[in-house]
Length: 474
Image (tube, rainbow, N blue to C red):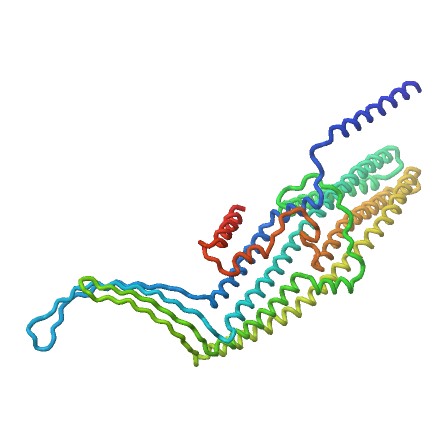
């Protein structure tokens, strides 16, 4: 007894020293959290960068459309060499011509009035920019949701592999017990064969689980941008509530895809106005300054002109009327798309809540099933040692416990993914909503720099060049 007491004291002392060392010298490798994975996915995604570039291209369309209301300046130059001779009437003499003339013209034009066609196109371009912003925000949600799914996929497959390994160890113990009982004549060869068959099936299931684990790692690497390290357990579930009708109303108000569809309808309406205005007259202010100089001669000119021009296209092969009808058809298509998007979003919210409630029920049921299956397995195994149960009964009880544990692991992962899917379906799964510590892309910053079409030599143009160089560097 003294030896055991002394040994117990030594073990407690070793444990205390180990605890102190762990506190004083914590491990440098910390477990990765779900927030870490989301940040990496946001910074890594090429899809996000692609759509940010597409948004910048849409921003430039506003400047292009706005250029129609600004002065247009152009110049032209001409160099002409005249040579030969001329003879007039019956005169016996001729005049040799050898003149070199140079002329240059500066031409300016300003649109004064076009019945709102240009302004309608500018406003339509602005609506397209807003629609593209909504599309970009939805892409961001998809990227973050994929990262959540990849994170939970790795955790799920890791836990299932652990459960399968534990099951394999138990079955190996059962096989050894069945062989020992067979040696003493308590069971038949059939019982041993059943244990061997169950063990082989467990090894096959473990191999399948390890394959799924490798696939989950590859998905994590693709979605997050690096291989998963030691992952922390997922955080507390986001509070999504149970108000399905309220969630659908929220999704209709703020989902980025629905707002994008609304802006697309507004843009289509404006393009109809522009097409209708194209059949009306256009008033422009035209100006020109020219300089002409002829060498080897005293002839030269310096002239200028300013005038107001009124013009209208009367007939263009039916193209003007066709443009109006085409714009109307595009408007109808965008309205139908808005109708479809709205119902798809509402269905997405309903599907997300259905999956969430199903996962909750599965998780609760699996918890109760595990408790009952574990008690049953332990009891049946004890009864089998007394000869009251067969080996098949023990194996069936073990399989029931394994199924319950696997269901719990999958249900927990499904519950987390479903919760974040609810956030995405209502438009709340963004870096801003999640308060991720990332550099948020400001869609208005680039737009404000380019909307007026700055020239390269202007102060705003130089600032824009710096922004473009930084984007290319990234």
